[in-house]
Image (cartoon, rainbow over all chains, first blue to last red; front, side, top):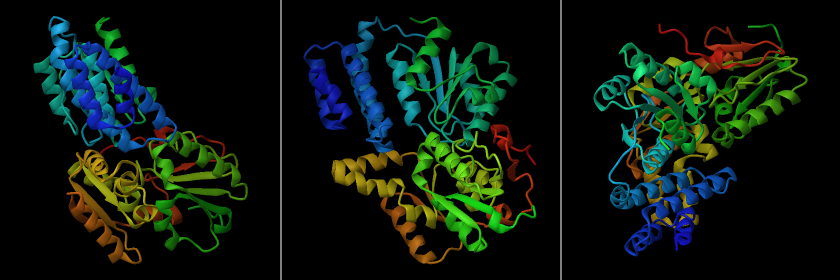
Length: 210
Length: 226
C-alpha cells in the first residue's frame, strides 16, 4: 500500500496522499515506511522535473505534501526512537531572498534523518542568525538562497558569525539555486550541497551521526 | 565606446530584454533573440548563448542583453569578438536602470514579483502558469498551487519602462495583483543601463570581455559599497 502512497504523492494527488498516510498509520504501518515512501516519491518528482514533465508548481505542492505528511508521522516517530533527537541544525533563507522550496525540502529531510532543525524562514537578517546561534547553540548552520543576490548575503552572514566569535562553534553549509564550490568559497562557508540528500550527508559527516 | 561600426555589432538578447533595447538600436545592427524560458535552466541558457556567440562570425562586438542570470553568462567566450554585458544580477536591474536601483527595491521588499511588458508578452509567469495548471489539475488544485507559489510574495511591481500600449500592460498587472492578493505598485523603469550597453561609455556597470577571454564570476563581483 505504500506503493500507492508513492504514486499519490508523485502524481500530485494531495488529498489522497494524506488520506493514505492516515490509513497506513492507523493500520499499524511503521512511520519510517511512510517516510521512505515520501523519499521515493520525491525522487520521482525530481526526475519528472529534470525531464520537463513537472515545473515549479509541482515541486512546491510536493514540498507541501511532505510537510503535511511529516506532521502526521512525527508524533509517532518520536516514540519509536525513544524521543531522542540528533544534533541541532539552524536553517534559513538569507536576507533579501524569499525562495524556500528547496529549503523546506532540506528541513524535512534533515528532520526525518534525526536532526533537530530550527527553521528561521525566509529573508532572515544577518543579525538573526548570529543571535540564534548564541541561544539555540546549533552544530550546523545551513544557509539557503536562490537568487544571485543571495551570494552577498551569505558572505555577510558568515562574516557576522565570525565577527561574533562563533565561527569555530559551527559548520556552515550553503545550498539552493546555483550555489556551488565557487560561491561556497566566496561566502566563506565550509561546504555546499546540491540537493537535500547532500545536506543530510554533510550534516551527518560533520556531527558524526549515523 | 569603441569605433566598431554597428554593422559589425550584434545584440544577443533575451526575449524580455530585447523589448527595451529595440527602440534604441540602430536599424542595421544585427540581433538574435533567445527564448525567455531558458532562464529557468541556466545550464541550457549557457549552451544556447555560447552557440549564438559561436555562430556570430561576422561580429566584432557582441552585446548581451542579459545579466548574470543565475550565472548562465559565466564561462562564455567569443574567439573573435569582444563580449559586453551589463554587470547586474538579472534583467530586473536592466529594467530599473541600475544594479543599485534593483538592490534598493529588493532590500525594501524582497517578496516582490516584477512584471514588464516583455514578461507579460512572453507569458511565462506564475499567473500564466496558473492557467496551464487548471488544464492539468483542475481549478481548485491549480489555485492551491499558485497560492503556495506566491506565499512569500506581498507585492506585484509593474515596471514602467515607457513602452507602447502602456495602459494595457498596466491593467493586466493591476488585475493580476488583485486576483492573487498582491499589493499593486508601479515603479519607474529607466533606460540608462540599456543606453550604456548600446552606446557607452562602458564604466564599472558594464563587463567588457576581450576576444578569447572567458567571462568569470569575478567580473560580476559586487562593487565596493559607495
